[in-house]
Length: 234
Image (cartoon, rainbow, N blue to C red; front, side, top):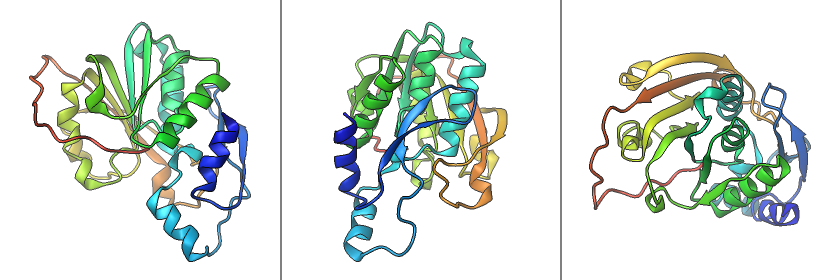
């Protein structure tokens, strides 16, 4: 599987490698991530187009993913005994944390097949079992908890804050991109923490400020047959 991950990376980034990286927080998770020496200067046009066409989100551990994984580790009762779906799973870091803290079933959902390859490889690396799902619409049954980190980078995704209740009894979201907290008016702000994407992308400092929101849904709404397909990456 690591060889496949490197082949996947090469479809986007012509140089750089993958390395097993222990995350600095409390989660105790190790991931296959792009090495610190990945190219950061101006890139050839062909490579830049490849990055825009298929960004290798899964090769980084984003700040919100780290924070949410650490939060679940510190509060294992959140996932223990529950069915959990990680939406826009990316590297699989949050799904792995859910599995390590006793979830009865964990599903990593991402439309990028390379991300699902990364989730599978990283699950094996951390000795946990995770199911793979390529589209939320293919979910076979409602889950107890839906978790998501950094899925609101596109403002067009904001309606998901309401629609996710069709898939789970509870939603837990970690976000570092939305500063207007009133957009989460139906959610409870339960923590605010800091982290840095690994490897460091030299992002704006504010993107390391992560808020965690939680919402319980009192009743199960009817599924809409013609509901739009949700497509995201972490």
